[in-house]
Image (cartoon, rainbow, N blue to C red; front, side, top):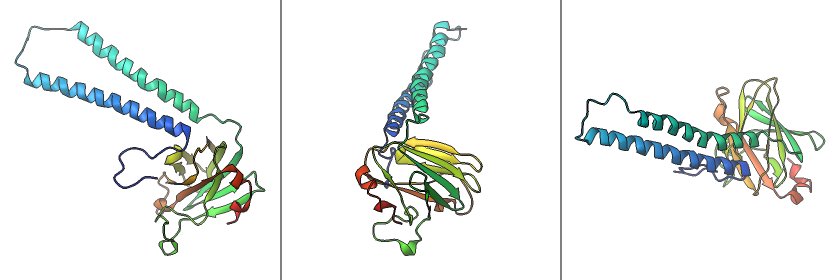
Length: 227
């Protein structure tokens, strides 16, 4: 999860999120290069003593500053489109979880385990244990296995919500009357936090998401479902 004074993105636990971080760094370096070149050109323009008022055109320069931005856009677009298509792939999920947004809590349904359904509310400050995170911990966590493709079916029962977990690179809108889906495969065990990322009312900031990712062998034992 994020920590104080963090500048970059959170550490990834999903291969596509690692691709997103790489693409972010790639695009950021291109932006830095463009900014440096523009500032350097402005500096030279403001400080040079050379002037020539007889120049009416510069076709070579115009050709360069037309083609160069097009090449830069291609260098940004190609990896972006690749990652975009990767995020839409659904590869034979091992487990399907349905998430329903409410004002202001989440309902989860394990459709592959006898229709297990439970609500997940934010823990009030009075119920926090040592080590719990204020405004982020919940009473019932979503327990999922690692190294197994998981499909999340996301919808809403009242207003627009958004199911987002930054560490997994996931952000899917929960829309009333519509069922959206996203998939992920976690690579490391741990507890990962997210929040509703769509303004959904007065208590929008009190809809945390907590995923507890454990090894598949432990997940298959069954007691993890005891709420």
